[in-house]
Image (tube, rainbow, N blue to C red; front, top):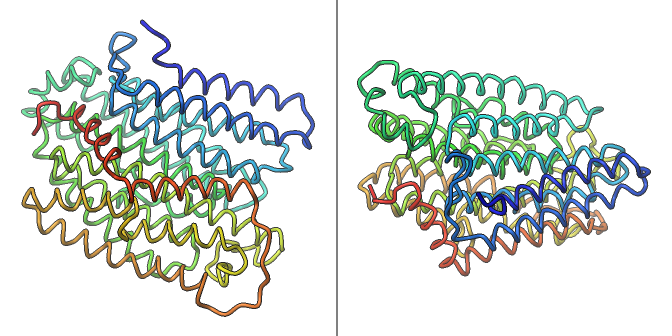
Length: 483
């Protein structure tokens, strides 16, 4: 067994522990260095993951699998963590809990990476909980902010419920198949099809993953959690934690429970339509930008869920590419909002609702780099051409039409058009409403994080071929022989 296959995860473990221990022995005024140390460790883990692309292996009695799918999602998680870490250098400035913040973010990502590699339901569950427990604490990081505490408590309670449902479902699957190995479950799934307990297990797994991915009606925690959490934490949750649920659902439903395809495929069709429609319709009336992005994130989860319905190599590749695109777009949008919140709080203006749309008025004049970045992100989320969002939607929607599910593609396209209204409203506030505010200094860490996210969004839009090929290779892990 070659432990070097886990070099990215081990690098993050060392980085997280080093940040935590060093933070205990340095004064508050010097803790800014911890952000740079964390970012350096994340870059090293990302470089190790990229250099190991193309590797295929199993570890620890085949409970972990290193393949194109796991490597793809590990890079998604590391990219999101990198953006969050860079922006958080400014966010945690002056905080006496800096080491806890970066360590929790790093260990949450380690959990996400092990979910991507999990080849066994128990490993997947433990990795889920590692990521979840860390993000529960991160959501309530602002201990003096009642909304942050509320966000953490709601996230914790709903997350605990979803964990219980998942574990209950796993126990039924183990009882019926005698194993928790994902490939072995697929090979012994005959009993699940003929026994009513199989349907019970399926319902429990759908509910558990529905909470993790924030599909309607299992979404109730997401808007309040995303709004109340610090913006950089919201970026990690929406762009990272949600993708953890998606890759786990890919493994469980498309590999382990493929024998029950007829049952879960129709459920995903209903969930996808309801989620994208509800998310977009409710987002129309939001005046909190973070809450608007939260409901937008529901809609994006609905789009990605179409891959479970279409279930062709092209559709799965489109869904996987969408995960990467959404990581750049959504993390960038929350970080841009975080920069605005930082500006508002530093000026002691509207501190009760610092992410209110009114605070984006004239942003193109006050914070031109942040405003331009936000414009690119929201237009990418809407699917405007030459952006990552357009390429992902084009592949996913095209595959839906090619498979004969024209009705589903039409609903998705109409929803995408509807979303343009509330995205354009943000741009209207930033550029077209009068303001007498003067330009303010834009925090450098936020600006660097935004620049990296913009490059990612535009690179996938202008030069999609390598990213599409990479996503298609990842999809082959799910359907090696095609469907």
